[in-house]
Image (cartoon, rainbow, N blue to C red; front, side, top):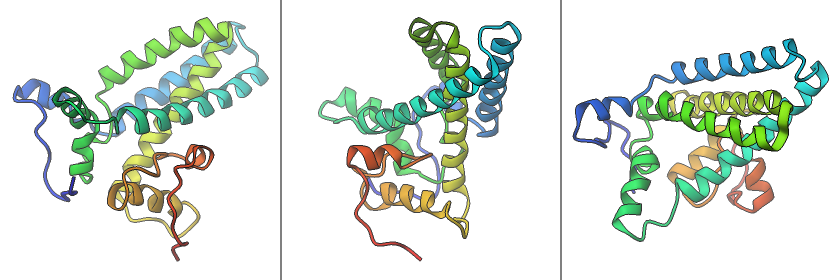
Amino acid sequence: MKPNHKGQAQIFQNPVLERLTRTHIALPISIFIVIAIGLIYYGITYSFINVLEAIGFFLLGWLIFSLIEYCAHRFVFHMDTDTPMKERIQYTFHGNHHEYPKDKERLAMPPIVSLFIASFFFFVFKLIFGQFVFGVVAGLLFGYALYLFVHYAVHAYAPPKNFLKQLWIHHSIHHYKDPNVAYGVSSPLWDYILGTMPKRTNSK
């Protein structure tokens, strides 16, 4: 699918549904940072976790998010489109972004959808981690907010002249050279581990 640097895809004919697919990036970032802080505060205040546990499980949640980010991007957003239904789902969730990578209003899921998914993860991780869920999900949501910030930055701004430039290069390779590599956005960690790092020469 050839990238188009101008315009927006039309996903739904219904104007209300179409408007719901567009989100200013500051809204979900703010929502999930506030929720993450609230979870840590609640967990410590009501003695579900202490400060050291909060830090440790926060970092674990952040790591878990990085794997979820990678797997969702690789196996869901880039699913095989071997049926018309799969093709429609893939385009709705991610294909439109590859076609219009400069569309700043579609760099995040609508908050109502991401809040529903976050609630689902809270109950799943509550079953797994018990009272430590407050730290884990806080780290998970912080990871998501950071992902949104990085994803927006690499599409909206020129790369910085420091080590962070590699994030811009990594994601640009995914969009403009090979969509089957470089699935990590906020970090290339799982691309290194799972063998999807692009083969490239260092860019100066």
